[in-house]
Length: 52
Image (cartoon, rainbow, N blue to C red; front, side, top):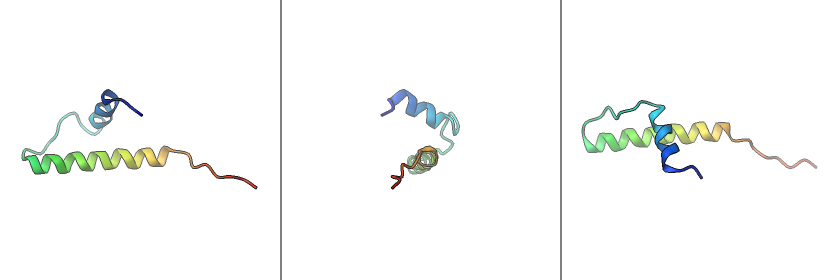
């Protein structure tokens, strides 16, 4: 499980600052960033398939 520092680093990969000004839009922007990170992680995770 990654620590808080690595999570912040992942969020910074999509831009160091939050562009939205309002709190609702900031929350939405963060949710979108987290969804992108989760999708990228899912694509990079190997699927284990049992043979035979």
